[in-house]
Image (cartoon, rainbow, N blue to C red):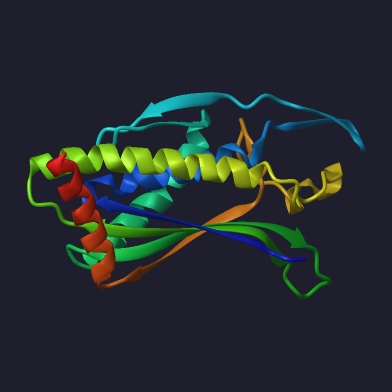
Length: 218
């Protein structure tokens, strides 16, 4: 199986990291989750509904939609919080990457553990910049909101392509494809990982500052 790989990149100030990551990760998971399966007998099932919530950001001019499951939100927030903390500990400027990998399990014979086979990976590169004053922060608030809107559209376009998805499993195999541990939603099996680099590339910082200065000049 070929694993599909997508890369997104955002430039934000430190206080925007959490909201930007939550907006993108929740957007992807919204489209990679189903309602709970209710099996009547093997091969026959119904699918529950997926509730949604509109979330307004505090530090970005942006509103995103997420699955209403509080359990799923807590799991995503925990991963993003760990990433944000690691990024902040790397210094005032930094660059990091958080990845959302979807996989399915392939049962192995005893005594070997199950094999996890990735089928889609989303990598979000994050560049953190320092801004000089409140005027720059306000412009950044607007510009990051615009960029996030573009990224969300990009995510939806990619997901709407007719490419590989794991086939709907039988009742005995549903845990090989979906995370069934949540009571109100059923995302495809996934894991979130991250990595941090200590320094920010000069080109990224310069690009953001040029964007802000160009806006100030208008």
